[in-house]
Length: 260
Length: 215
Image (cartoon, rainbow over all chains, first blue to last red; front, side, top):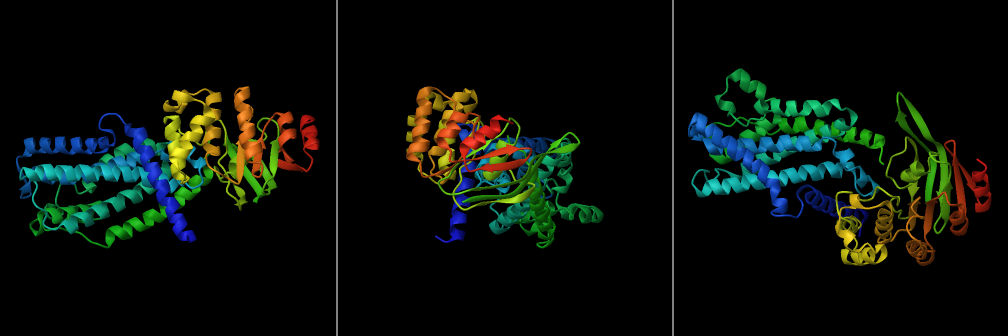
């Protein structure tokens, strides 16, 4: 086996083992076990959607209210819980550094991966349930939903890659992150369509990469009637430097990490 | 072979830094059993962590040309919230070895019985040492790093350790941290005394223990 194939083999083995370990420690083997990972986003999305439905009626921006809120809220919860899980993830897992094949990037990847799978499952589950009641439309273009998810997750991952090492460098971050993720709500694109905003507001929110991703998803679900506003290049141009910075910070933090 | 070249390591201490390792040079060849001696806080565990790649040195580098175990001690290498068997499963997964063989070995070697289904954080230090040894001996390495756990446990366990390490794996390299000069003299064929951040090498273990006892 070539060195590259061998390295890849070890990498996959490590990620799988870490994933299973994280699932066991977080959810245990009792009752529904790892299925708990989709319960939290599911409850969040359903309850918020019902709240909006009760307050504002059945239709928003010409599309079904529940579908609109659910499809916007789950990616937002993914962002929020991924960032929160990234905080102090190195200190919490420092005993894993005893095994050289495990890197701190693996720790970030695994924590993000679990959030991603959980939220993806919740999304799929809700769409199927709502769909069977005729509340979730048959997607206009499934490809765009997937593309939007890829963009949204790419952005989320690049932010966790910065937050995780920064939280080890300063305790202040731990205090301000919950507020910051809350303030992200208007910049996540979850509760509006860019096309119905005032032009100046639209211009501002389009500086935020997840808004582009959300517009892609919404286009994939509802079709051209919502007049989606997105750019395929800008979010990537935003995220790549974030990833480079994140990797650099990880390298610095790894050198400083004191392990018992 | 493992080569440490000019290793420096410091830790934050208030507003300054404490320099624990100040230019360590050390080579471990295949099959050699090297003792690390030194007073408490001299930096033996710090050095073994750099050799095992657990921490990254400030300066200098460690070259590993054989497979090296993680430092075997009371903590590290396993997860307190998981059970003994879950830890065994995790280790066999990341090192790509068979879990059923690992489990049989751990059950047989540790003699912990049903405690293996309890979280490791409930274990006594003797039980931890048994598990730590079993997990690392369950994977074959060219070099084992052993940090002070060699003398824990009852007589029976010590005999088992001795058999597994020094008889069955007599051809392997080992780096051993111990305060027990008797063991060091019996099992090691080279020694380094860690003192004031430097490693003083000795080809003769008796000389090393004498030097250490006079520190």
